[in-house]
Every structure is written in C-alpha cells, then in structure tokens.
Length: 105
Image 1 (cartoon, one colour):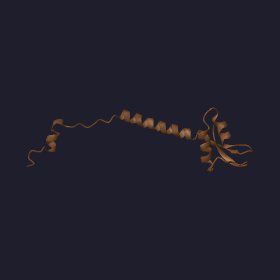
Image 2: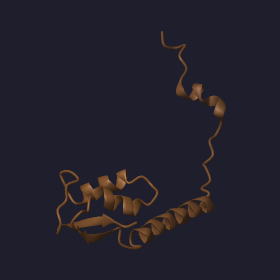
Image 3: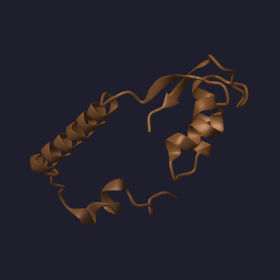
Image 4: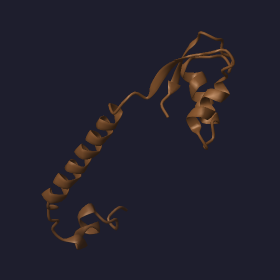
C-alpha cells in the first residue's frame, strides 16, 4: 500500500551533496562594528546633558506660557503634556512657589 510513496532520499535526491555555507567574516565583523558604534553613539547622546531643568513658578505663570517659551514657533502641546507628566500634575493647574521640571529647549 505505501510502496508507491517517496522516501526522503528519493524526494531530495535531485539536490546532490550539500556544501557547507562559508562564513563571511568580513560581513560579520562589519555588522559587529556597526552595532558597537550605534550603541556607543546612543550611550554618548544619553549623557550629553540635562534633559530638563528645575524652575520655580511665579505669579501669573501658566503651563501653556512656559511651554510656548520653550517651543518657540513650534507646537507647545507636546511640551505641555510632558510638563504635566514629568511633574505628576493632575492637570495644568500650578501655584506660585511650586518647583517644576521643565524640559530643556
């Protein structure tokens, strides 16, 4: 009944002997070097400087005004969100004398 089925040897018999794949050490070395340089660049950028500074809130200050001064001509909304998140504020309400972590421009 199963005599007509092909065996593994018969199925793959047309491929012949398989040769080992040669390791391309130049490519392996280049890939390793690129990975090391990339990790080094990221590590160097992480310690480049402070990502934020501390600021004391004065009378009349708002989170929106602080964010606009940092954003310049850009959109201040992501900075408002970051100030609220970094300082664990419930909303954008701040009071004079409060110390805030402000993202560096």
